Length: 80
Image 1: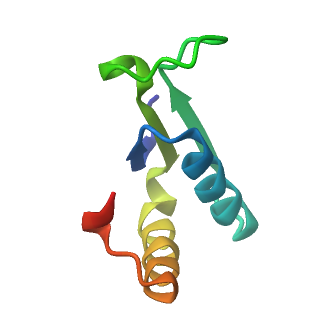
Image 2 (image 1 turned 90 degrees about the horizontal axis):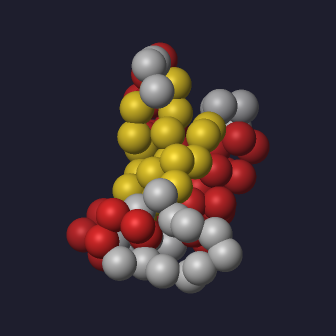
Image 3 (image 1 turned 90 degrees about the vertical axis):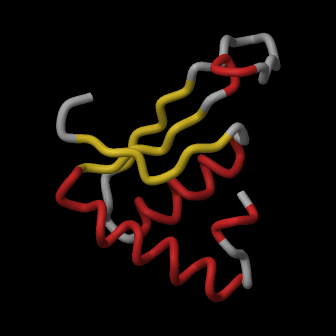
């Protein structure tokens, strides 16, 4: 995905969707890239990877938004 960078890597699709909605609410374009195979709820290794991607030029702003959210919720990046 040329021009897109990863802002979040997770195995939790719900977390990815929440982050997507948060960023889109701030006007940032977001794409979720998932290696999950539907309809099987398998999360083994690469099969379970979910990446939240933003445009390169919006990366810093998106990161600031996520940091602000983590500060409000008391969540540390090491908790992921």
